[in-house]
Image 1 (cartoon, rainbow, N blue to C red):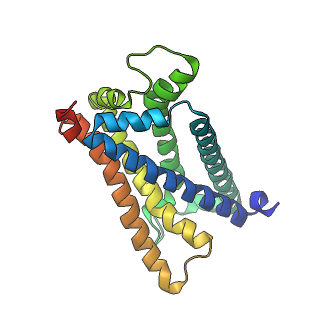
Image 2: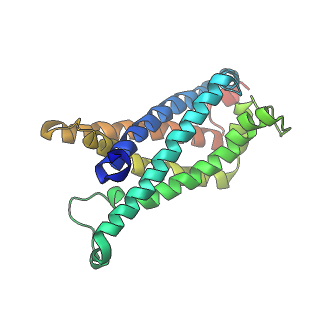
Length: 227
């Protein structure tokens, strides 16, 4: 099947799964923004998205998208390296007009995956997973607000999350317009426009996540004054 065997097919799969993951990040950013203003409202959302059947189905679907995206990125990287052969060692400088993120997508992807594992441990493991298996942790599985406060009261986690968000920004700043280009939605006129739209969009997205991290790290979120 061309989607799994050809380079273009792999890029199409990565583009579709990548766009789906960006849509999830958009929802996640909106959900996190709620925690800035109301701990109770945020916990209501967490309870709604707890170990319910629809949340479990959505989680499995999201996990499948992430795994497919990662696997195809790895396969495409190996395919590109094999196609270049020894010639890749002869290049010592970055080609002109080629973005740094484009040249380092694989490394950025590794950082993103490591950050994701940390994030899953801090939140998913203590919340949805704990509710499923009945684990007794420091806080109630539905008390996501408490887990946010605890996580970002730790300076080490704050730094690690900032690094993770920076890696995601670099990854998406290239991935957004690259996906649009791969799917054939950008002509000569719209190519630069999509790059600008993507840069603004992913920047705003990461700013929301960063604001949550910093607001709880410095205890200046409006919700912290009311909870």
